[in-house]
Length: 311
Image 1 (tube, rainbow, N blue to C red):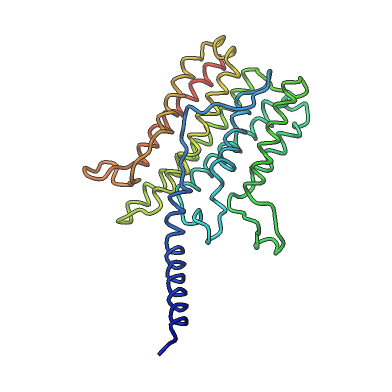
Image 2: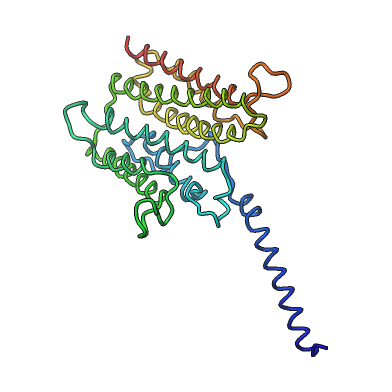
């Protein structure tokens, strides 16, 4: 028979072990609930907008900082962190960064320089390069090196800093922001093209869903496109303020507002379960098709704005 003291010790160790196992079992699911955030707040406003700066550029920096600091970046979480087990939030965050990367590229090529006659702005160029970084790089990227590396979210935060530096210089008259119609048209055309690519992704997944009973990728595609549409809504809303005088002078303000309304509706789509049913089905909805409707309507309205600005 075990001595009483030894028996008590084994009992304590057993309870501690059981508690540890319970903690481990709850860590992932509770952590997932704690971390998971699809922040599609369309009332968010840009922070740190300097006098004479661009509200759209400030909004891009604000979104990056929110997704990498306030909510933390989840797309590069390793398997032992709760974020690794999520899929919708990483897709949403990645969609936002993809849209901001496109916007930053067009800022560098079309608006932040005299087209074809000047060098690219150094801060915009830096932001573009950083936003091209893959979203899933953690502290190590063993595909390139065994040494520690800069994580995706750290690079994105550096991109936000570069955008804010550009905006500060713009407010001080040391950077360019072309407010001509042709520069804005070029940017809108690139966004229109990107929305076309997003539409193709939706169409491909809708077709793929017909071949399976339960489409497990529908939600990934939905939230990736949702993140892109959400970011474009906020960027274009603030770009409308930056170009307010031009839009009013060209009588394009009403068309611009209608385009924003379509993007706003698309941004707020939030089904409890993303379904990819038959587009003419009676019982199962197709949320990808619904999202695609608003996307294509916004894309058509963007083209209408461009046509008005050309006149």
